[in-house]
Image (cartoon, rainbow, N blue to C red; front, side, top):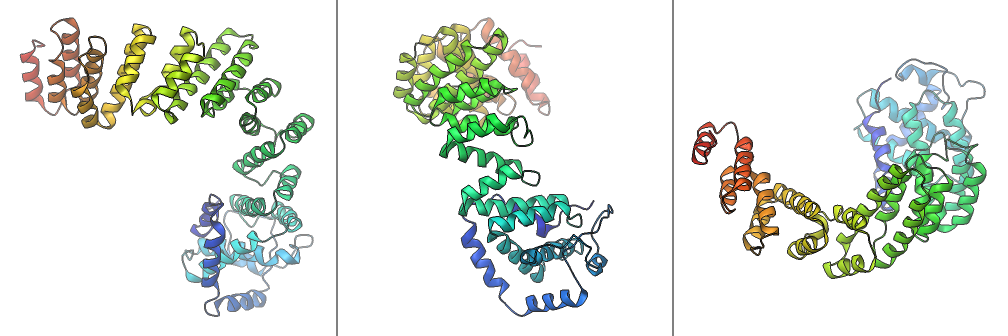
Length: 439
């Protein structure tokens, strides 16, 4: 089957634009009013006997001759939708003919979107029914038309939108269904959960892993404990992923405290020690990551009051990456030195400095030059920085390596710099090896 035309790809792209669509479409309607081409096309359609029916063909591609087929019994679109189906076929044909960028095609595409925008709930039901039977329009295009019409209805009448979603899902894209559940649970979590409990097994196409997850995450915005109860009740295949997403949404210290308590309750109910540890590791990581939205003082205060075990503390520290601590590297490194085991401390400092150096070695180098000569932190940071920049700044790496005291640690770093030295710079690499006795 042929790929979607550029004109129809525009329809798909438009699905991603929700809040700002209306103004854009008003402007596009001005274009559609220019000239008389629209009236000419309508007249031509009538003269050709064009109807929005569908042929029961499995042949790849749509050809002009299909416009000349007689309407088949039971396949005609409702009168209010005839023009929409007509335009969908014509835009598709224009793509096959290499005319998707023509002004006439763009006008038709604009009119098609405009028509989909203003369908009533009942008209959308009729549209979905007709699209299911129509095989002249490619499936991906039928799905995009249905999803677009429903997305526009969602903005105007959420209750009707939700009702249709629950009635029929086969032509709607997953992101729209997920957003419907998320919005529903925010508005009426009790009703949403009751529906899932009643219909989940009978409607697997709707109540699947993704929609369950969306339901749980939305519930966590108001009640983390309820959200974790749902993780257990709905038996998610990847409960750890749901726990991770719930923890990720704990943006404030207060919400993080509530989520931590709920998480501990959920983990205590897991019988498998391996599954329990994995879910905990993922969730506590997200607690650390969420601290990027806070200042150092507030984050440290929360950690201090959370009564974390040494293992929980290390999992939180795993989430303290460069972006989480970019404003207070020195303070955070000091905190790590005081609160983490030497192994975990060195691991985190090395990972943060190494990532920073690879993304902005000038800034990382400036920080390193001004950092206090701490006997614990500075050597770890120097080694991480030198290793990170060695493949593209080997001389810089060498200079930093030589700031370390002579001994096994420095010699091991020099060996690593030598292995990372650009192979295209053979002479400099050989000279480096000779200087440091690496030959």
